[in-house]
Length: 189
Image (cartoon, rainbow, N blue to C red):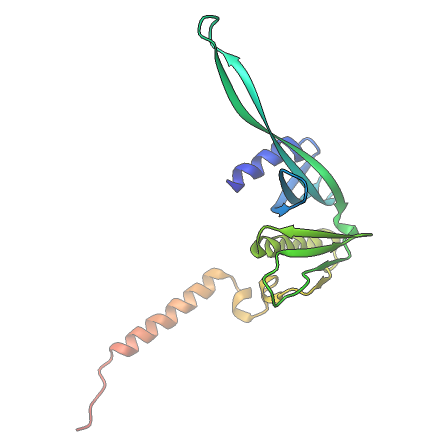
């Protein structure tokens, strides 16, 4: 579902603006309809954050011959960017409390924007994307506060080497344990 939504937003909203949608999460807003926090990259490597409002509308169409006319109803979604910021203007991302599963976080621009993600996982997904984009396009680290940092940037030796290497080491250790458990133990009687 999210890949279809990503393609639809890319086609309808971002491609005409010559932007590439990099990441998006669904957020909760007081106005009706679905809302998304999106991060996109433009042609001149300009990274933008935007709030996208998706509003569904029902339309009916007549089809068929004059004798047998049927009405088709279809749901059409319209996407509109309601707020836009530059990543360069983002000074701080505040997770509020790292010890509580709180999907809410604060984006500090010239004003503070509260964002309520639908899940904590979505919140951390967006922050990981912002950190990577800030490192790549802004050549500066993104200021983060009140986050559980191992979920954002892996710090241990094993997790930096890639998932495949870690998985192969775990399998190697598991095989060693199985082999050792099958070895006969001499009993001194």
